[in-house]
Image 1 (cartoon, rainbow, N blue to C red):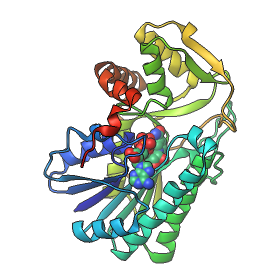
Image 2 (tube, rainbow, N blue to C red; image 1 turned 30 degrees about the vertical axis):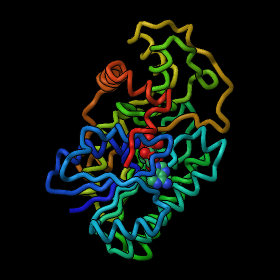
Image 3 (cartoon, helix red, strand yellow; image 1 turned 180 degrees about the vertical axis):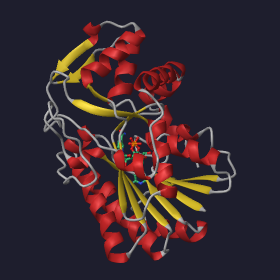
Length: 333
Ligand SMILES: NC(=O)c1ccc[n+]([C@@H]2O[C@H](COP(=O)([O-])OP(=O)(O)OC[C@H]3O[C@@H](n4cnc5c(N)ncnc54)[C@H](O)[C@@H]3O)[C@@H](O)[C@H]2O)c1
């Protein structure tokens, strides 16, 4: 089978590709990524010379390029990771989120329809359900209403609805996964966990929104990519699957864990003005994927976070090259 993986030079996409390219040597994986500030070609260095892998720099909004790729590589399956993914950026500049996350998904769907692909998998987020009060016991299931709060989550919810409409209207074989907050190797240091590690290592202040009590459900990225792989291969067409790490923690707990691991003082923490419209709590019920696809996360938070911190300790050049901008020069193709 021939797979088109979009956004594969980003955090989750690159972890997914490193997993599947090695696991399935008889499948071919074409990565399409336009290397925005969040894309890093070096994330793919362990697979770049594999026979069953090819990287193409390009935009999912370039319809001519999409047609060329589907035609040339006889694409059977699309897994769409490509997105603008940082909520703060969406608050400052929503337009690019609508362009990439909604129009880009629509362009992919249109070309996928034309080439009658076997599966279109949309990588979505728990943020499409909106938030819960901090003291809520409720969890969002796949049947919960969509109530996104930020321009980012609105763009992801819109894309989900488009994908579902291609199933209902055209019978396209789609699946959608909605995952909670990921952490692990190769995450861009704009996001909470790598930002805290990066700043703590260099003894810089660690900004925390409000009083740091916002709760997220955390999942180790490798568990997420294994779940996506399972859904793409075994998931029921037309279905949505939540993917939860079953690990709810507030931001301060996360920061304290990292500071303690690195032996750094809590005095580095600095409370800053809260994010506009900041979601309070996400909580996800993932019993559907557990019961129907027999999927269970394997990585406990304590193990996942220590592996993550060690990865950043052992890959300080990766962080340094982002800081200096050198990472943007890696791709010279
Ligand atoms: N990070 C999380 O915790 C999380 C949780 C749930 C769902 N998701 C979803 O998973 C997906 C991947 O997230 P991530 O954290 O790896 O994001 P990321 O920002 O690290 O990576 C996104 C990748 O998409 C590429 N890209 C952006 N616009 C593009 C375009 N127009 N054409 C081609 N490529 C483009 C970027 O260059 C980058 O490589 C996103 O769809 C996101 O909404 C993320």
